[in-house]
Each structure stands twice: as C-alpha cells, then as structure tokens.
Length: 155
Image (cartoon, rainbow, N blue to C red; front, top):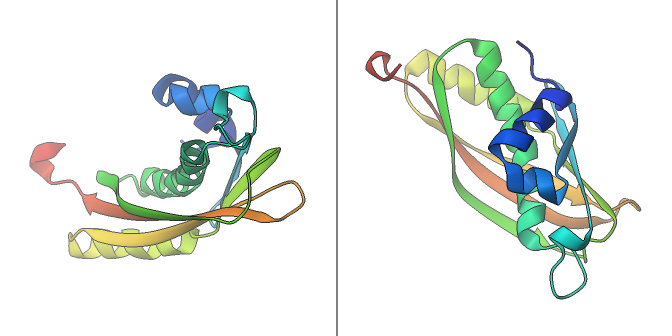
C-alpha cells in the first residue's frame, strides 16, 4: 500500500496529535522528495510572535520521516527506523505558511539497500529546509536516521 499525503495526514491525527493540532500537513510525497507545510497561528506561536521552533522541527522531521517510512513500506521488509540525532539552524522569523522540503529519497534508497544487503544498521543524515511564502529560508533541519533490519525473532 503506497503512502499518500492524505494517509500521512490521517496518521498524524491519530498517532501525532500535537503535530496535527499545530497544523503540520503533508502536501506531496514521491520517490525523491516530501513536502510538508505548517502555518503560523495562535496554537503554534512563541512569545516572540513567530512560530515555535519545536513546531518547525515537527514539520521538518515529518518531511524526512515520511520518506524513510515510504521506502521501508515499499521494500516489504521488517525494518526499524529511529532519529538518533538532529541539528537546526534558524535564519528568519517563521511567519505565515512555512513549507519544508526534503529531497533525500535517493539517500534513503542507498542506505536501505545496504541495510538489506548486509543486515547491518545504517545511518543517514537527511536535510529539511523550511521556506516562507516569499521563498526565504527560515530554518534548516538535519536529522540523522538509523535504519536496521529487524531480526526474525523480533517480528
């Protein structure tokens, strides 16, 4: 079953309710990229009249994680995934609609192929860039994802 933005947004409603309530929404997903948006509003504001950094982080992580999840599902193999590290850079106040884009689908393909071939865990750094409606970068997030083929006894 192929993941779609509609299925991802349904998932957030039940499994990531704070992201759903803050307005994090998947807009597109394909083999190479995922696009996620979040709009500045009362529920996701900080005291400085911009979007709270953690809300941006949820949207940015969702863009990377949706790609990893999609690739794992397509493989039909039992593979676990986990964020093991992250870093972020904030360059402008996040106001209005912020669009996070991750273009690292090929990196996931390569790491997943290595994990399936060798049986060893793999880590990959993925980037998600958030831009405002004017196209100005407001934040850039990097997430280190660990993927590992599950052992037969854990399935």
